[in-house]
Length: 281
Ligand code: AMP
Image (cartoon, rainbow, N blue to C red; front, side):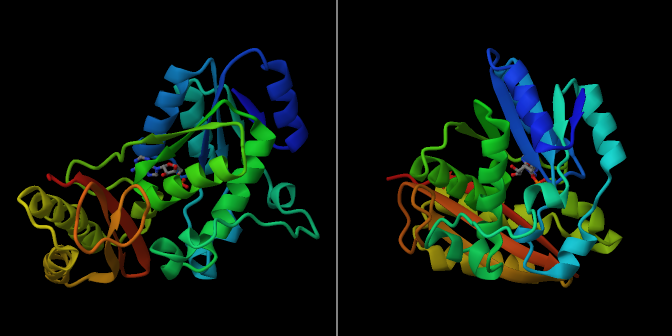
């Protein structure tokens, strides 16, 4: 496995492999099975696979959250090596944001709702770093998790709007046996919070079942899910939302495909999760 630290290393890697298809998995490290599922898919669908690890300060609106974000680079590198990844890109902060950096990418309107409303500036940071990484890596395909549903939606939109030459592929959410969506942030949960956290997926499943049983009103679903999560004393709801899956517009009366998403705090740790449901006619 090649370990690349500079943009020039990445460009050379791509120049040498230009006749081969390249799959790219951008991450912030502290790798878990969710990341590995993206990497395995990339390996299956491409001749070569590259993974990046970069904890991107521009997408954190809270400096404490950035400071506490788990970083285990040696463990990550060993894991990537075992998986047979061809290259890992570990850029420094200066490599991504050199002195005098001034240019940002923002997907208008979409970046201010849901996660964007709770985390101002988050998606501007995400879209900027992903654009930069796409420009450096020049992959054929890039893999993103449905776990971050709005991020996946926005990156697809950005790639279309800016004519970026990469195919964006969404991958389903990997969960722990008790339903909790895998996340690097799960490492930060206190034991009791970890025990309570599966309420998130249980409440999403409840919302999904209600829709499948014919409930068409978003507010009824949100109230039921709110009550369920509030029964867990350590959970503090940031938002629960129901949106049209294909436009991300807020849904009131449900039809087509809908996205139920939520963000909930356990102590200082903010967890997000979602499910997609097809509404029967
Ligand atoms: P992160 O390191 O959290 O920025 O995530 C890197 C990529 O892995 C993103 O595309 C995430 O959506 C994806 N990802 C994170 N958690 C999961 C999961 N539980 N299942 C599938 N993909 C995930």
